[in-house]
Image 1 (cartoon, rainbow, N blue to C red):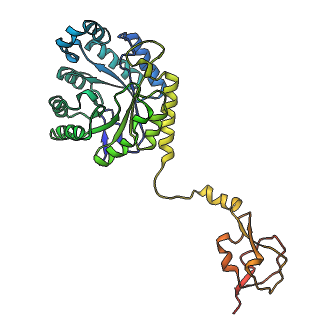
Image 2: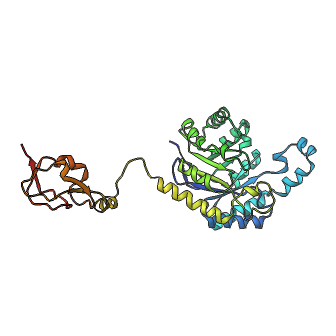
Image 3: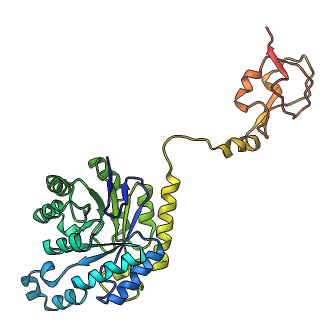
Length: 347
């Protein structure tokens, strides 16, 4: 299996064409016009999908937290979009031809995204990996699920997958993720992509990247990653939550092009010699030549032979087959022996 189909008709499979998701997070600073500019820039960069955050002050934090962090409530409210604004963004995405998705943090937000926005998938944030009631609710909606695994050990990931599977939903893409912004290179552990693929052979594996730069997602594609999620911004010099680790439009375009190029270049495991390479053999490989002038009737010894370009004569790997044969024609020093110039071995 290891292939799922998103609701925008995209197929995700290990080593398949990478699906690039521009994570908008809070880099729009709660401004709908900035968000639209980001959507347009992501489309121009070649991204397949833009992903927002569907939180409210009620769905993300408790009263206990707000009592201890009074400024947080204003921050969450200021950086969130209403349902009306999200629908406006959905319509804009549809207009310019890029998929829209979002990360929900409540059942109500799940319903809105599935029923009103027709998202291609529901993204489950790493923070909800062990939120089994929530996972069950999303699974029962029957939509494809992109499951991020930051902060989770392998047992927690196994449990999360089982909860979703028990709803009958097996349209799952698992994302390797390190929930540090940004992580140290030594902690990214891209080989976890291989480990997750071995642990969950029925599901495609992707990568949610929080590193600075584009090297890690490109490398992940070489390891078979089918979905890349990367934070996106119009200007990472602005101070904002995770905005400094986000990728600007020009760099995102490089990321998209490089990921696609790497995936195309991977090819298959079967060894194939191209038609053009077969032609190159004539130019670049070596053929058997003689090391001295030889006459018709001479018996060829190994010392009489060497190999040099071009590859239009007798192949270099046939040199031992020529030893002991009798020449049918004269051959000058440093010239190729043609295939019809030696007869059967002398007996």
